[in-house]
Length: 299
Image (cartoon, one colour):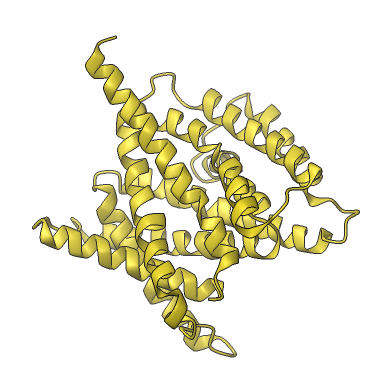
């Protein structure tokens, strides 16, 4: 293997690990900010869209899509990404960072479910082992006998909805919008999220959007939208070009571990034995599913 190829792959691994660390930091914002989940999602989406738009404009690059169909598909992808973010944040908020982050990594199994139902694609044989294994992990994490069982159940439910929406958005992106650079897709999807949340807020019994904590949290909002949203998504897209989607997905399974360590040091959140065991089982199933279901060619 030439030194150039080694450097290329090394860069992909480094980009993935950096992106994982940034994305794992979302757990702090879910539990460490006073701003509610809906407001946080609106703020991070607006900041990410604004930053991408400004950078693209400064580089004199186009932001337009090819046809009206792609604008419509971007709206659907944006809606799925928005539901994913809201459920993901709320899952960590009401349960724990480790539990919410781990539930997200059931998305490889969710992807297979969507492909089997809507795309008539038979799941690989490994799925008949990995899916029940993940279910065992979820039951262990639920801890029905504990005082937090109700919150854990809500966290798991929202985490699974988050994973389902994330899987659907990724399949939509891969099947219909792959021709566009990642920053263009993220720009439109975050823009759609902003619009949908503002419209949704009009129909809620009581308005949920609040910027009351802006005076002392505005810097954290900027950090969340720029460094913990726009930047890691761009890194992941670049890393896929360097080492392939399978390698990125497998490395990404360390994200809940990093998130747990950050939650322990920044929030004082202690992981119980059952949650740790369940997380290991689920992440092993997710990594195995990714490894056995994707093509052997890393690209």
